[in-house]
Length: 102
Length: 178
Image (cartoon, rainbow over the protein chains, first blue to last red):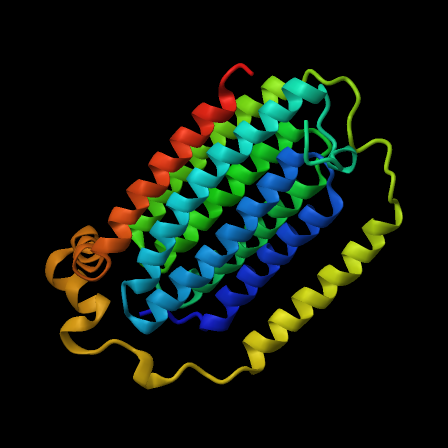
């Protein structure tokens, strides 16, 4: 169906995943760390869809569907945690969050 | 679409998605990062269209670029009142260089593995009535997806609803006034 080699898509996916990893390592705003995690999830989704199309099977697309749901749940809980940390600490810098208690 | 047009569109999408992904981690302003992430998600949806996964592309735009990113933007605008940018004073300045080196190692290792790994076994391909392209040709794209979801993965689909309920309850508990 497609004439593009499957490894090209996978390399784009690897690049996006690496950019997400560097974002998690470098940035200290938890919101941007969250966005980087979303980027990594999406890079994996691209690999799933690529292999689903290459193997001519719908399974990869279903994994993407499940990952999407889990990502939505993760964002809801994570953003709620960030908002409640902001309420108690008045600032959001991950380097200053070194205690598990409020 | 086939031949050169497909390859040109692949490269345009690849460059655009990687550039907008770099924007996510390079912009100082969190709102710009969020908008850049929305762009990345839209480009990925176009990749999915190119790969023939129409339902996933539409869900990507509706749920990711629509719902999830709106939630992100709400929280970013809510918390942006903090005058001092947390990225201005860096306690561990050396970690940027380390992160860049580790990132290069990661992308090198992933690319090496993807390019030199064992080629996918032809036997792993679905054949006959199992093949996705067959079902798509006979019944359509979304029907093929729904059939695969409800015939093979109905339990996972039901568990998904449990995950969402737990997330809603968690957000309620965390959002309560303490």
